[in-house]
Image (tube, rainbow, N blue to C red; front, side, top):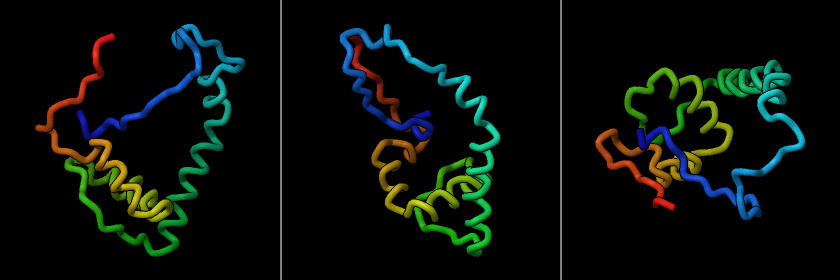
Length: 106
């Protein structure tokens, strides 16, 4: 599962982040704008196809052939191959046999 994870750091600036309150409902916000998000994602893929569907040379992600073709390659074309290096450094492209990194117990 390590290849499907991206390490992030959150800094909510609160003593007890679990009690944080939001002014808006994030799930409702995404649901309300779903059509726009889908259109934007498809626009990136369409632009990639219009540009000839160039393939960015980077380490492949095992068992994700179709995903790599239709999602990863358009994004790599848009943001550059450096993005793939960042993901590799975060453990996203490591093999399935690699050990999982566990967060320290609190």
